[in-house]
Image 1 (cartoon, rainbow, N blue to C red):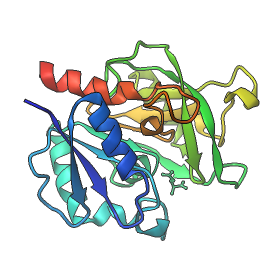
Image 2 (image 1 turned 90 degrees about the horizontal axis):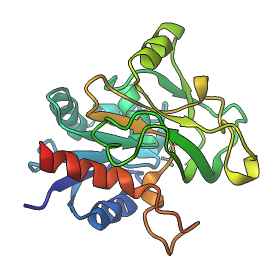
Image 3 (image 1 turned 120 degrees about the vertical axis):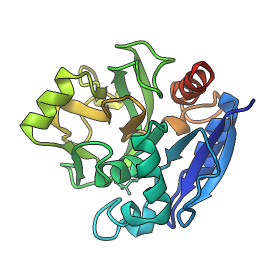
Image 4 (image 1 turned 180 degrees about the vertical axis):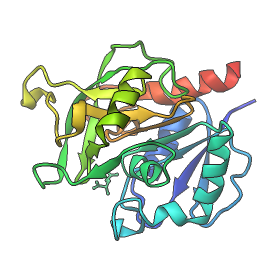
Length: 234
Ligand SMILES: NC(=O)CC[C@H](N)C(=O)O
């Protein structure tokens, strides 16, 4: 049976179509979910795509957190539903406290749009199983509130538990996509919850899934194939 992956659209979401496309390219059915849906239509996993949900008013992700759809997502994620938050989706996941930490304005105070090199640090999550730990990938990055912060204790805990899922690669030329783009503490680009079903990151894997688009790299497709593998073997 084809896996059903829900893709949530909030008012102001931008990357829902690309995310649906990535889901289909990986071989699953993309199920559109609207922010007012409390019913998740029996999807097997959910992706919160990027954009400016509710116009980023108050703070990115701060209003989406209270949407009807998130009420159900929070409840089901605690029960093991796989959830991936990309960029604004990651911001929503920190606001809901499904993931620890918070996102502040980039240290440059500029919106940054570029291809970004990352290292997959944890290949045991529901969304990274098709990568190998330590693998370097390059996917687009585009945001203004991308600076990941948390208190020292939380950061130490994340490191100790292997929950820093992705780190910005800093050893190389900025022109080639290296460097910490926003001042994120410990170069953290994404994290996972303890169970590995909830994962969030600032860069955009859904924009790097087809050889004819962008740099031609398909480094992001692994997120969407990983979850399928996980669902088949579950
Ligand atoms: N690409 C995005 O999802 C943008 C995220 C968010 N609105 C920001 O600018 O930080």
